[in-house]
Amino acid sequence: MKQKFTVLDLLSQELKEHDVLELKCIAGRKGLIRVIEVPNINRPGLALSGFFESFAYKRIQIFGRGEHAYLRKLEEEGRYENVRKIFSYEIPCVIFTHGLTPPEFFVSIAEESGCPVLQTQLPSATFTSRILRVLNNIFAPREVVHGVLIEVFGIGVLLLGESGVGKSEAALELLERGHRLVADDAVEIRCVAGNYLLGTSANRLLGHHMEIRGLGIINVTHLFGVGAIRDEKRIQLVVHLEQWDPEKEYDRLGSQEKTRDILGVKVPCVEIPIKPGRNIPILIETAAMNERLKQMGVHSSREFNEQVMKWLESENVRTIYLHKNHME
Image 1 (tube, helix red, strand yellow):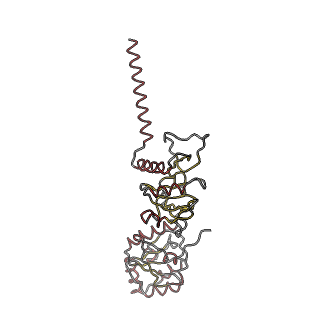
Image 2: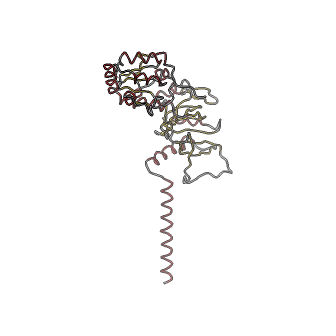
Image 3: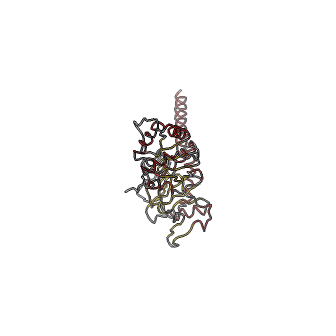
């Protein structure tokens, strides 16, 4: 069962840099346990004017300068009925931007209804973009897979395979070659915006540790430095490691572009068979560089096939031409 996300959880988020919301509660603290069900916001201008059809009350309500000025007008006229009606709905919380302070009557009604009132110093446009990004990240579909996520030449590579196939050992060699570890063993994958897969460690405390059979647990940060790790990375390529099967026919030209479905997103996938003498880290590096080329519009296998077809066509034409001249 998915854990409920409350207003208090929103206030407790450890956000960094461009995601900082600068939120604080200024009223209705007893309502901080209210659940946020919808990863979206609403500007309640129409509701303040008395139009409540299609009122998106399950969303976080944002009060900017326009709504704040209208509240001041309602206060001067002594008209509070629309505000009372707004708080009669089970809205999760209201947030005032620009560091605006709500009128006393508004705070009083919010306290009575048990609805939390929050405040941020950020302007409405900035705050809106940030909170939507934060909520989309929090409510994103997610799953945990057994594998290793590593950044290779800027490409997020998810190493999958049976236990003991050598995923961590391959990742360790890639770290030695200057690449960066995101997560080992348990990778949490989130689907953001419907088509963007972000991977991180399922356990943030143990995320930058690796289990190497024969060595035990190693601390990647201490061994390779902070330049060898990162907290999260977009997954752009899946590399499936498997023991070499002599009965299986492996793709030798790369013309069969395989994908793996993760949370409804199809990710390019390559299968690398393992047997003595194969340098797996170099193969993973090559696969990552080849994926970068594909993203730039360069498909080596397609170009090879096109060149072969052109050569065959030219040879065929030449044969027909020579045969015709010989007959004459």
